[in-house]
Length: 130
Image 1: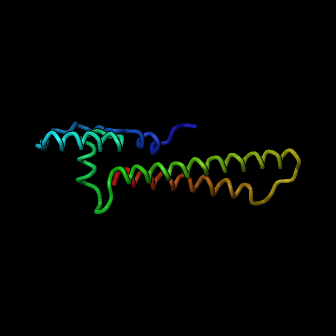
Image 2 (image 1 turned 180 degrees about the vertical axis):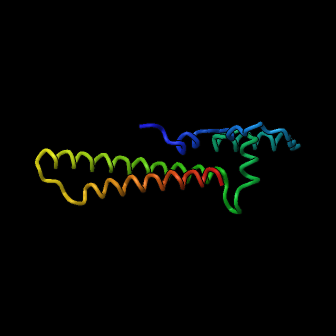
């Protein structure tokens, strides 16, 4: 199975490249203590310091990049469980085909699981790119 875009985005510590690049630089002056704290927080969130600052500046009130990442991780975990469920349903269907006894709702269940996985991918992308 091809790795989804949502999964690839989750592991990135830097922002995506922008067509034409980014030409504006913003500098922030901090004390040594503040710089050390930024480095620690960025490491905890698994991102670079510039990404931490950018995400913090553009986050909705009350949310942090770390919280969004944790939510995205949880959603992807749910997606993985749904994939396992779909695999189990396929195994049941294979068995049913071998025995000639195929439950009517098995195919609908697989289709519903696949639709739900797509919706979860979309939700993860909205969380990661507010």
